[in-house]
Length: 463
Image (cartoon, rainbow, N blue to C red; front, side, top):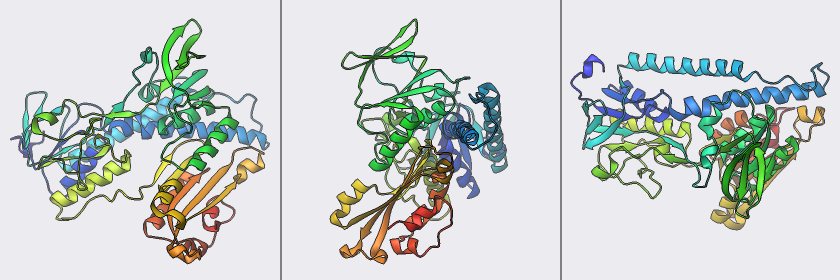
């Protein structure tokens, strides 16, 4: 603890040193607040250590592998089969990158005068956080930002599988992989592993990938994955896992076995790290799943206690936790009385192969809200590199618009959803997300000169 707060009294105590907790601590300190940050593990939370950052590193490795395959088709003298990734060498680069992030956090915390305590904390009373080392910290404002963790289904043999945390402990591509799930993590790991040499099968309880994303986009991704060799078993409910001499077998609800597999990955959701925080004793309300309930200003049911990020269960994305924490601190310590995060039209990306970008309403949501006023425009195509190599991978872009008064004139069609599947969708979405947030119309897109030849030009040419 720094000398300025050696008495254990602060303006703010932050419990959790992930993206949201760090963002809140830094912003509060910038406004002059005395801040203590409690984090018993590695700084950066899930995102930096077993989430966004190492995931994107592995995604980039997979992208290079796919590009080498295309390069060979286009005349580059590369061997068949292509050389495999040296996982251990790549992991060294990946972990060095993460270590640099940790070091940067430590430098910034020291420069900001934030007291970092490598211990767990829990709420002991109003304005009091008890540390596991026996120290009690006092502050009128407390921010809970303890994030979440993976969860597995309650089936026999679930312990034979690994989760996304376990994926980052792999030092080679397993030959045969089963991935259970259909969300971000399942889809992303499937693409990475297939590109890096595994044979991947997806076990999906429902009838589609990526609930909450555009159905047409999800269907095209499933087809792109099929072309890459990823087999998806839809409508499959698992009953158990068991190990045999040849690998792990998965048994479904109809007593049918699949496998064997060398590795099974459970990508079946996450749960909040809300236990052990002392919430019940102080009357901090949580929902049936354990997520801390907050209002639009990140306030819990107890004055002076706030929560952000995956602990709250709303839009569980790193940039959301960061933005919510910063606005909260602007309100508490920066004099911005009405500061809060607007949760509407948050852009998000799935780092599949190819990636998906989404902002605004999907078609089904738009029709439920606006009925017959909805207009949908789409463009399906092969990106130039894949067309040159005669690869079957296709892109699909969709605009969801609402025609004011039923008028189909482009200037009367307000864009309420942008959905992109294709190479560089992750990079091109950000600018279009700003435009959607500002209320663009189809005419605004048409009035923008296309950049040719690019995939992004399709967005301004649709309709």
